[in-house]
Image (cartoon, rainbow over all chains, first blue to last red; front, side, top):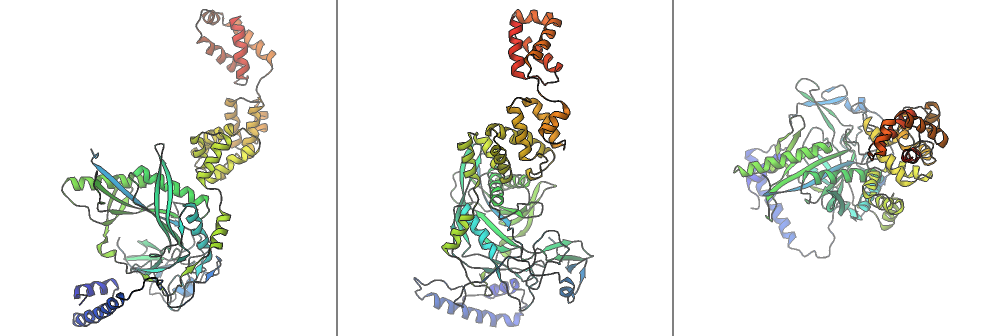
Length: 95
Length: 478
């Protein structure tokens, strides 16, 4: 297998996904299978093929540099669990 | 003591782009607004929103690419840099990794009279995060997302700087350049221009680089120098004492003048980048790049060379004048008024710079306009005032007493050039200082200065110095 359970735990932690010990083995196997398939694809000769960064055959549209938005703080904070003095409140972050 | 070591420094500079709206949304980026009044659904990453790229950032980034003599990638791609922090609502920062807009640039710096080329690895577009306000409420951190999504250009140098002084020279040069080309206001207090420094040391002659520490968010030239010097000493001391430098992020504490560990980078560094599926590749063409090139202002190095070549200024004078574009413009306006370039340069770099410095003003805020300075220089050139008196006139203009002619008139500073009047005065002084005349005639030439002083005292400095010298010499030699 290309991944061990430690790597899966680490990936889960970075993505803030809670994976139980019971599920760990399944995920390790499934994710390894995916990576094995990627390895298989890596064997294909792609010389001269441009890397694909988006499945759509199109390029980014650009917008004019104009301020179009107005202050909607009240509406946007209506669902926030806690606010004070216009700020969203979150549990204290220690630097 | 540290002569067996050499230092390797690379700088990452974040320049906030001077746009009206955000990188991917139509929210304003104006500084100082009430918290969260400039953060809309896109900035807050509410479900169902899509980013749309601001056209102006492509223009501004291309300008930097041209100014750095760099490759401008006609196809660039935005990627997601994934990490969790409360001031990053999306859970990722949209940035560029594989295909940044600008690559392979260069910047020339001058340290101790020697020019050095510093490679610029890349400059990529990315969004700024919001702001955490600590101590907002008991046990809480306040989050202001006005800054979230503000367009930044991260400019990464090659690890080719070898001292704190070189790092500061590079940073100053880039700071001046981004303002010249109008892509960033350079306001360091407001965080428009911030610097992270990657610092490592290795013993002299060693090929491979030492382990580096990254010092985050240093927001003044002085602190960059101090933080890097502290870090160099810390690393050398650590290694000489048998320790090892760990790769980590460190924070500079200006109050204590030290850097301290923020977090180990080993884990935090795993950002799992991938191309942002919400954004398509950005493609620009040659016509776009050429249009931007046609719009470029004269760059600082070219301007400096022109000042030396066309105006006959010294390298130092030209360098000082071209440090900031407004100062260079001011100088050119004075010269355009028919003033001798050397005289104009002396006044700009001398009295004007001193007053600006003293009152912490920018040249754009100078109470003495280029037109006023030119007016004063004309009065020096036509002998109405001497250089010395001109300083008094300058001060008068600075303090709002009107233009040069008004100050000269009101304060009665007009130079005395009437030969008869000066002669009469000198006769009087010679008559009443027989002793000194004796000394002078006996060969004590130093006494000449005494007579000049007497004449200047009698005329409150208003006698034309050249005339005074000439007449005095004549009469004393008698």
